[in-house]
Length: 91
Image 1 (cartoon, rainbow, N blue to C red):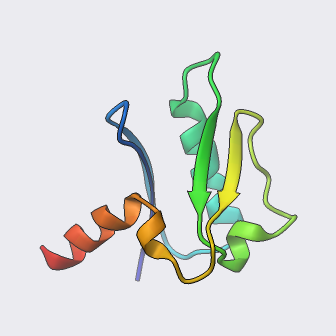
Image 2 (image 1 turned 90 degrees about the horizontal axis):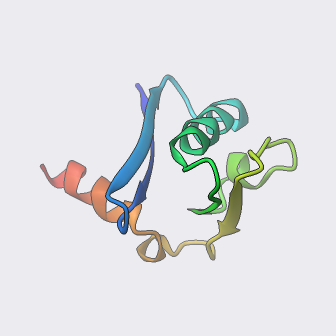
């Protein structure tokens, strides 16, 4: 089984994603690095994340150009990337 990590910017039409063998703090950190590399050098971004343990741990190394906003528990409809996951499941 593989885990798909994805982030999108609807305004810019950009995305950053990875397919990794599992979900944990280390693989989440790899995805944040991938997002960080896609951001313009003089910009910062906000990443919306649910409250999975590997998203909220103090052990997660967050790049300086990223700020995390934790979404309320059990509210996937607040995260725009969930629409992409639903489309993938349906098709």
